Image 1 (spheres, rainbow, N blue to C red):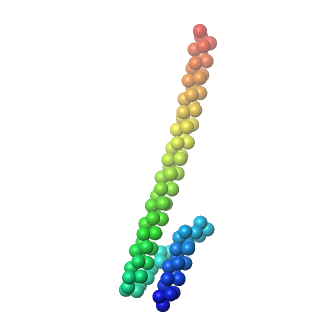
Image 2 (cartoon, one colour):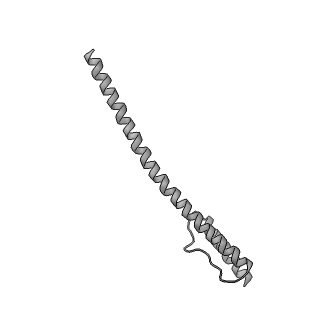
Length: 92
């Protein structure tokens, strides 16, 4: 029984660190011992970490879109200034 629980934890951790796939659900151990407590706490920590990473990705995407808009606005401003300079030079 103990060996199977450790094996389940190892398989779960292999999925957590994999770049190919992720666990379909958190690992849960219903036993009432120290190993179960460690497994359940670790699983909860990993879920929280995944939520944090997801939020960072989302915020990063918003930031990227904002920076792209800002770069476009800056280019338009430079073009406008260059056009104004050209008009002033023609008047002079």
